[in-house]
Image (tube, rainbow, N blue to C red; front, side):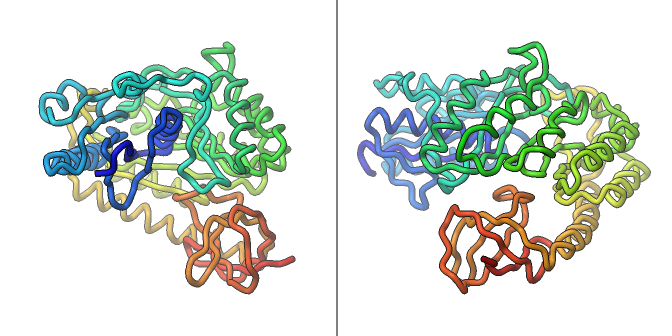
Amino acid sequence: MVKNRIDVITLGCSKNLVDSEHLMKQLLSNGYTVKHDPQKSEGEIVVINTCGFIGDAKEESVNMILGFVDGKKRRRHSKIFVMGCLSERYRKELAEEIPEVDKFYGKFDWKDLMTDLGKSYKQDVALERSITTPKHYAYLKISEGCNRACSYCSIPIMTGKHHSRKLEDIVAEVKALVAQGTKEFQVIAQDLSYYGIDLYKKMMLAELIEAISDVPGVEWIRLHYAYPSRFPYDILRVIRERDNVCKYLDMALQHISDPMLTKMRRNITKQEIYDLLHRIREEVPGIHLRTTLLVGHPGETDQDFEELMQFVKDIRFERMGAFPYSHEDGTFAYDNYPDDVPEATKQQRMDELMSLQESIAAEVSQQKTGSLLRVVIDREDDDYYVGRTQFDSPEVDPEVLISKEKELEIGKLYQVRITEAQPFDLYGKIEL
């Protein structure tokens, strides 16, 4: 056990990671040594930031807590604190089931941890973070919560209604991160489309991205998690016209058949989705679209799934993920629909969908062979430098493997000639 050290463990999405980074800054400012996701946890205190989105994530979070409880019993740690989505959703039940945890915090009251440690929450560093990603890129959370009411989704249960951060606070955070060497920003939210509507009485995503784009030193801005219904079309002009706004948009569409869209409470039709995607591609030539699709929602028929497969064939998403439906308590679907699609069918449909996408991704990658692309270097492996293009977000998208003919600098952007393409990786060499 290392005295005065706090180990912070983050589970779940990048939005959780941002919360952990804010917490870590506060802990460091109060004199603690802090480690994030250490290979060997030896901290006197452990803080676990949990995910509670779907069954697998909840199970992972609970198992992580139990593992550290065992460590506490063996005197490897003196205190364990739990925060985040799982404890926001099940705080009372967790406290009863796992009394060895010193205290549970929710999604938004983690600041009380500082007081409980006998320290203070320092307002002068409230906008600052201790970045856990490579210093050249960071996640930038612009809002929290969601006003949508999708049948399957537990996120509003944990995060509440949508609330935007002030534009000037976001820009101030960007400037502070740029001063530390950050040049690439993954703009994230549960729902980018609604940004500003609560504070400014109108959707302000385009104005926000322009303001971030204007900050000297910002090289790339990438947009994650837009919502298709009431889409802010003015953002397309910004993506098209601004050189440092990546031609990339992540928008979870979930399904395409009208019966499923209705059951899912998506407030959009099949034709409207097709029209939206055609307009995006028309207004921003070369844009790469990432989406997520959901299979096995209650009531999904073979016909619904066939429509979904045809949709993927028609649109040919450059980036796509899929996941099987999880029957989550507290959601509209849980209370109103039987979970009537067998698990084996869910898995089979997801496998078919991802097999189709793999063939599309291979063709998309192949089209890049011979092209000259701007690539940021993320890391150095034994055989290659590993980077990404503007069309690739960290962790989830393809990488570019660059031969070690020249010494390259991590975090720097280079012109790279693509020499070979695999479904989920490109190969290239530096071209000066």
